[in-house]
Image (cartoon, rainbow, N blue to C red; front, top):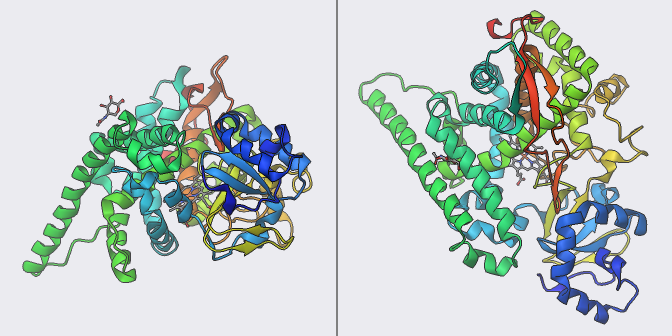
Length: 504
Ligand code: HEM
Ligand SMILES: *[C@@H]1O[C@H](CO)[C@@H](O)[C@H](O)[C@H]1NC(C)=O
């Protein structure tokens, strides 16, 4: 673990709660030798530990031993104060974890610069061309649904996660790479396998001290898998890129207009040239697949399950979708008009903010220069901060916070001054599902559109029920909180729909 002398010693430690909290610090050194023990506690019961700490140290920073070494935990109340601090970086935490040095994990290392690239593309290109993007996305989802959920009008059982992951991978590939690869069976498999293998390998590697991870990465079978898929993915992307260059060159030579491709492959090249980033397209694409596919399919599953549990809200969402599509068709503005659907997604994300990036803690930051909090706590350069997500379920912020109310943010939107704040893509101290501040998720505009289009198809085309006895509890490991990959549902193609969604 990290050298504890870098940390603000005066901060209480959550492990200390168990035994040594009252003893002077030098006895606390014994605690460091007990790290493995406490760290097992972290893996199993991070959630309980954070809850305990909130009551034990109200509003106070504290220390906690995790897979990332010792971290300084800040409670959500500290959010405003640190969210735009220039000495706190997101990419720094990735570097400290030492995993991005292992061959095959290069895409993780590109997250900093490429994160900026996503931000530029998302704000400029994706928003500008969203009208052109909506229809192709809808087409991909329709295809994926008929493959994964079938056309049968009798109830049949499916496992949710593989199906939703397939939908998400296809959508992401279509927009970021174009139709060729989005329809390639091998590419889709490689994307899925690469993402899954990466997450499995990370889970394994984080059991060990950061310093030895790059070394372990050369031998563990999980990392070897990642390397195999990484290499294959590059082999598949490179010819597509080369072919484009060749076609353009040929057009110029023949004095014909250059072919125009309306997908991110083009935008990535254009924007990285303009901003002087040294972008590697294959790394960029794989980085997107790692950060975008797991997150998006996770939120899609938890929203679908929440809707299955609230059939009256599901029907209200269907009615809204039908009404909007009837009057507006597939446009960016139509997605904006689906305000109940927007609210439903934001509510599901509020209750279960998801996944390994934020999980129970939304923001992780590496401290690149000493900072002093307003209560006088000094946090040394080289330490690491995590912020808990408690405010999203705080009764002082949300009424009946434990209850899922699909129209919660819809109703909030009607209040004067809250219209903007209550939207899915708007981040705030009260809702940090996409982070907040300088490093808030740059892919959220894109994710929001994908999620809405996917739900339109899922809800209009199928009836849904939970499979009897299926597990729906989240799977927690340390700070990571994911939907249950084993959840099964029953579905059947609906004989009549409020509107025929494929012929809009
Ligand atoms: C439901 C889907 C998604 C969720 C819940 C989600 C959530 C998050 C969160 C919580 C962060 C960290 C923010 C922070 O630390 O303040 C993040 C960062 C990031 N996300 Fe997402 N994300 C999603 C989809 C996407 C998609 C679709 C893309 C790309 C197209 C994307 C690209 C990124 C990138 C590049 C970063 C790093 C930003 C930086 O370094 O400044 N995400 N995301
Ligand atoms: C992806 O993983 C599955 C299951 O592990 C395997 O059967 C399949 O061959 C892999 N696909 C590719 C293209 O390597």
